[in-house]
Image 1 (cartoon, chains in turn blue, yellow):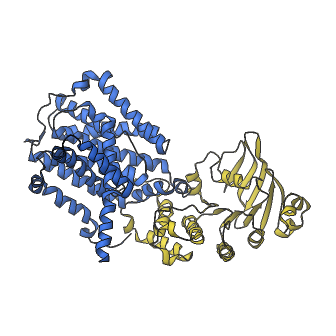
Image 2 (cartoon, rainbow over the protein chains, first blue to last red):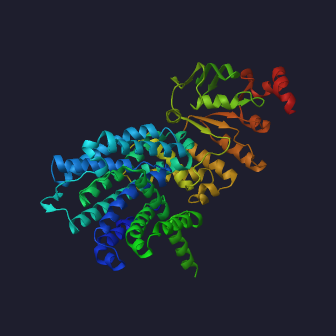
Image 3 (cartoon, each protein chain N blue to C red):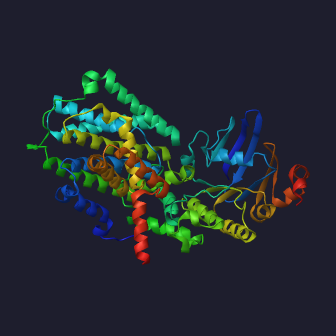
Length: 320
Length: 249
């Protein structure tokens, strides 16, 4: 808890991230990344940063966050089709709808902790998935997904190519900054205290339940924003946006990068997407196997993920 | 005037009557010890006072306000803090962060959505937390992670957490259990120096009880069997029979 830092010092991580993100179209192709993947990485950065507030700070592992991503994606798609191709109202409505659902789910699932919480969130996630596949098929397109949307627009600009990338990068930077602000706030302090010792917190005059619900809803709002942006990026919503596979992927990204660091999960997201989409072509059909090995190695040897690896390297350099 | 009024409180766990029609008045500003053999219901009674357990019957009034059916955090906000048998702290946080939590709890109440306020910009609050830490002799450990403190220091930290909220009633569940002799003496000194805070202390160590308490209540099998000043309790035949006889004091 240092005091009196300059704006630059306080926001070093955000500024560094902004510099890396905004220059991505320049250097990403050099390492084999294609245009579009950079946008996807930015969108997932938003998703995992919000997810880390819940997992890394309060210690609650949700296996159902795809629900909030997916609900927002479908809402955005339906807004484009039925209301307007302007992305602003679509994103706002999508985030509001998805976050409202999160309040209800949070109230129900946060009654339990540990594995029971994880299973409950997984169950709710799957419930929404099967609803999209069957009950709400006429709205969601079921197995085929939601298609036939107009090209999204922002103030007369078509949201394609670079425009989508810079919009996504801008949102990712803003949302990372917001997460850093939350981390430094009294709310951030209470989040970490929940992970440390919830009983002591309650006996110290803090209503931990409300802080947990707040965190859950914030992280769902991040997931929702990412889901809405995904449809801006590519006007299509598939049922897998709601699936447990996506929920699991977000967990993997966070763990590989290092939970509770905000930056780590973003590194994890970038790495996983790069691996899946670029390195997989070089490695061949067994790429998932290699990804699995990397994941296991990280969990066994570096439970703090990439962030732990980096701080260990730093320590070693300082020694020499 | 009694700050805490426990009236006819009963609580059973299945067939076991943990508390039976317990009546107890704690006077403001005093140190009141609860003693009794193992399983007498001392810790159970403390847990009723903090909102962890709901009694089957009876009432508890704190400063004229009922405490039953009130959440633990609201009870703490009313001014009741508890020191646990095993020091309850926030292990992965620094000493300063540990004490900052109750300072914010005192300012903001049990919940506030101040997500964009910078904690470290609240100088007066941080300074108050630092003062509390210094008062308990942890000045050098300000930025140490709490889980690396010694047992005695963890106890001090827990006290600092409790005191930072300026409680009116402090409940202590065997605060010297597992402590070395000099640590016990330091704890007694510390507790004696905290004037103005009403204390209810559950303790097995009779040295601690007799050097701290102004009044003692003896619990046995969920009932209060004797009550009085320390010298009255020492000679009380019922107490000797139920408790002191086996403890050889």
